[in-house]
Image (cartoon, rainbow, N blue to C red; front, side, top):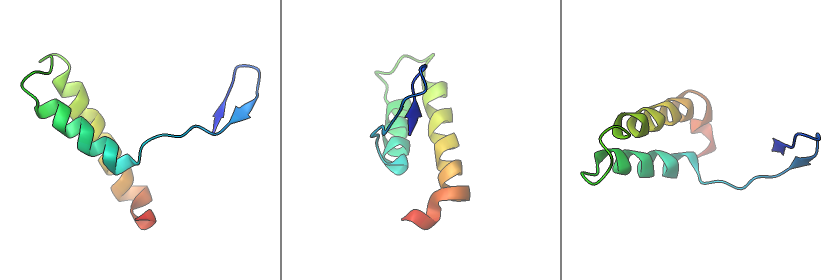
Amino acid sequence: MVVSPRGDMAWMRTVHPLDFVRVKTAIAASPQRDPLKRPKDALQAQIVQRLWDDYLAHLK
């Protein structure tokens, strides 16, 4: 659920958290990726993985 600045609500479709982790991990490992962006990509993957492990794993 997302909320607009006017207060309207809408559903937002997005990728599965584990797909996000898989893609961000692959991007971070890619030699073509900007070296300054790799740590951010890896950290984002780690954070989402931790959130999954701690709070969402029961949704498998």
